[in-house]
Image (tube, rainbow, N blue to C red; front, side, top):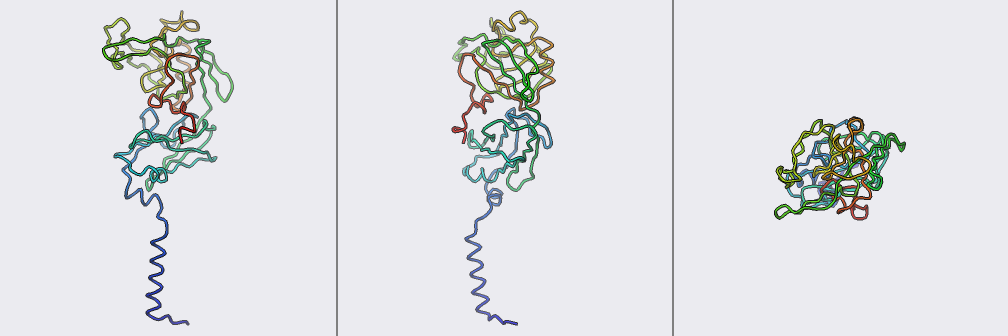
Length: 288
């Protein structure tokens, strides 16, 4: 047996300690010490549910309880794994909020797991490929399931133009861009005063609307409105929503899940912005 002297042990201990100090520390360990608590939602603000199915356009939103000073550290700590592997990146909206998505829509069946540093992982599955294209040139919404056309729905979109109310200029376009389904309600109370248009003005309203699928944070829906059936397919009459007849609205309501894609084309007005649920309207080279 080889005998090691006391001084040799001391020297060996010093070398081991020096190596340990130089070794990289896992991001999760740093995140546990530095990063504020985080919770995950969809772009609707609703919590991401472990094990739930979501659409091919789902965006993960990380909300931190406090400001994040080291975004690089946070990007490492907020690990996103996919099966099969998918490229993706975090995009910081402000110092408390980051969004994660791939450069293209997910493939159906993709399993996504997001891990908040040392916290427990959250896993969800991407469902069928639902893509709806609302084209103002034809006044039709064409709905595709797995790339196959399954329904064509006449619609009446935003009438266009603007109106100044007080110091606010309101737009009545259905903005062009790539939306996703946020949530749905049957019914939902639509109230123009929530975006600055008084109920008692000539364009104001407050009414209960059936079979409403929300696609923007500022209140654009695909919904039933039989009062505009005469216009659907030929004339834009709405404040920005996409009006459908009862059969089509009911069908689309039952068909839709959060994260499904709705592309709006050939309309006027400003392009859809990220804060309105326009994550997929941001080019990939500007996202990363």
